Image 1 (cartoon, rainbow, N blue to C red):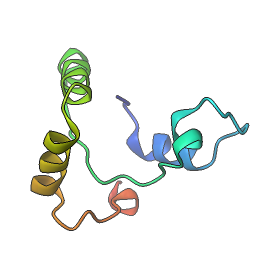
Image 2: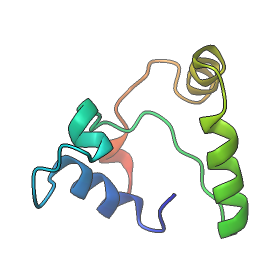
Image 3: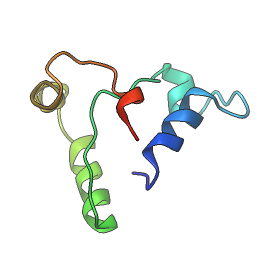
Length: 78
């Protein structure tokens, strides 16, 4: 969850210090393929927790419905 997705994407790809415990550094996940937008912070956090509990298959279906080609969306965020 973030209130500034564009900045979050930048810092995930360009960490200030190489942090081996930072998720994106550890797993080299730098590309956005799915996101949701919420106005309410509590709803956003609840949705994030819900998705984290999904199986891999359910997450793949969620992405396929949103982004069928699994395009990298980093540059589309304004």
